[in-house]
Length: 293
Image (cartoon, rainbow, N blue to C red; front, top):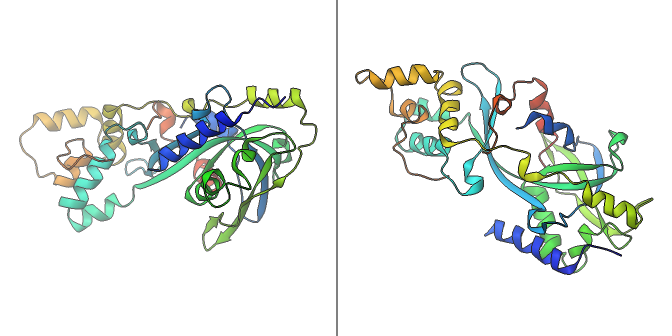
């Protein structure tokens, strides 16, 4: 019996449609993709809580101005909360000098999604075959998935994208090279097909073996993010910032004040905290290149 129901599909579709309108230990669970390959997966629903099948988030990343190491944090905007990095960036773009703005542009803001996938075929790492991995993807793959959920391809795909039986559709992730970056626009859902050795017991095992996407990143508070800005953008420790705040007015620019946590700009726009938020492993940047569909 297939435990994945139409009501589950509706909940998943509605939660993601509504969305439209750094724990390093987790990286090994991500499916890494490389240009020149086609990865075949089947999306796996969260049958216990269908609305959590996808995890949609925003993040900031840059090379630390104090250490030169790769720094990445998830934006609190992910949970509808204030983000000091975004506030500071907007303040700089409104009030900063040309030099301030150039420096601020080193910080990139990205929108991504996570979903559990059953790996049918990983041509680069066959050891992943038959395992549940986390697919991290961007806007190109998101459009294809949304078209399959409730867009132009919904009649042919729809709930079949989550069905692990022979009635389900594999997701063919085709990674091509466009200049210096990978592109995923040729990816698509295939016709319904079975998965080898995927009987009722195996389906239940896959459903039970999904990763909790809500815990991939841990919460980083507003104040913690301000400290990250102090150290990795403003190049000052928390103690330095406190001493400076107690001193008389200095010649610090308004832009530097913003990144020091004294943002007076408009509010706008993570959850990772702890030392693992600053992913200083040299392999991380290379890894990220294969995680942005």
